[in-house]
Every structure is written in structure tokens, then in C-alpha cells.
Length: 145
Image (cartoon, rainbow, N blue to C red; front, side):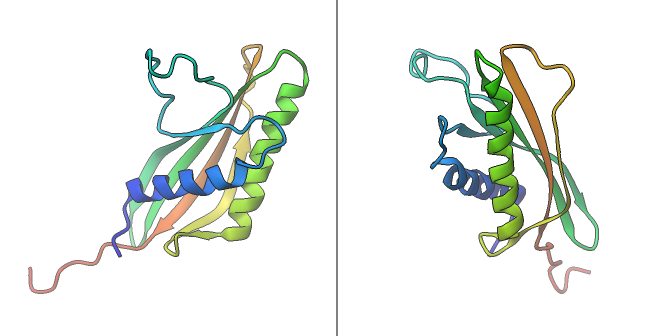
């Protein structure tokens, strides 16, 4: 079974969608990379809350490690918005660390890091999770050398 960073982020997206679909608050939309461009087709769709699954760094050594950022965004008119966002981040953290392997081939590694950038543009709250994943290594073909 082939394993690529693109397949990894798609599996992370599906996994997170399942985790947050039963949210007490509004379920965030889970996108790959960046927020979708605004157009007349999605003009009525709320941008917030969201979770972006964004590949950041890939390193191949004896194994293949991929760093994936999960960017969380919410908008609230009250002080509860920060806690709502933090709750979503915790739900994802607990689910990922309990599962450890998604799609039988992508393993999350420690450390698992979350943070809130100090500058928060009101009424928005932004959170960031940094995850590291191990993918099966690419095996060289026999007889090429």
C-alpha cells in the first residue's frame, strides 16, 4: 500500500472530521492547506470555526517523518470563544493520542505540541497544534545499482 504525505493529510482530515462532528458548539469545517477561496458558490458558508490540516516539513532518513500543523480558528462575540476553541483542540489531541495510528499506516509521534500565538485579533481566536507523523519508508528497487 502506497503512503504519501498527501494521503496522510487526507486521512488526518477524515479523522478530525469524525472527532468534531458531534461538537456541542458548531462543528468546525476541516480543510486541507488553507481556507477555501471565497466565491459566489460558498459566499453563504461560514468561514469560522475551521481547522486547517497543513503539511509543514518532510524529512527522509532511515524513516520518513512529516510535520503537520493543525490550525484552529474561531470567532466569538464573548469570552467563551477561547474556551470553545481550546475544547476542540483538546478533543482532537485526546483522539489522536488514543488512536496513535490512522489508516493502519500513519503513526503519530511525540512530542505533540499545541500553542496559542500571543497576538489574537479580536473577535478571533487562533490555536496551533504541531504533530509529527511516521510514514512507511520508500524501498529502493532491486537491481538498479
